Length: 268
Image (cartoon, rainbow, N blue to C red; front, top):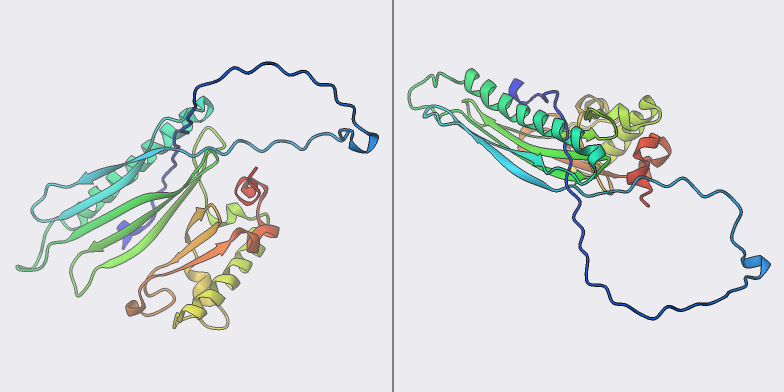
């Protein structure tokens, strides 16, 4: 499972599409309006505007290994150059990180399983399929379905999450503690919410002390309406139960979220 560990990897950005139409000319209209005092414009200073939320465009790229002994197919994300020139450099760096991560998955798996071993054993295989689930000018979140088989009765599957903040010159890979104002309190709240949801789903290894959930908390992705957390097989239930996912809406976490999350929680 070492090949399934998250590599320090990076970010993504996508181009905003806009459409326009033909213009028509109408006669100018002049009017004078006198407002009553109660309707006069407020003299209070306007609230600071939130940065515009742009949706980024992307394409899927593929890495396949031509090796008769090992089967490898990796699909990763490449974001198109954004219209916002201020984000152009950080998106290019993100694309480079995502491509490096794909190359690392291919080379490490091939190296680990270069020798097939026993005659007649099914050849080792790696399949990774990535897709963005959130792509704005502030954040990019990518989910990767990761399956590998290296021998034995079955392969191993997990969903990996990679989330990046694009508010600097370098893509920042976010961990759970980065999204909370107070990381300890935020994590405790998230563990409690995930434990309750997992119990309702029938996860067999979730106890009242929530130790298993706390230890398994790690893989996640940001979505427009909340946080999605992934629990791999064996982590909170038996392997036959498969993978569990929990969705936690932003409103349930809002008092504990850091200010940088406001474009998602309170979009303009």
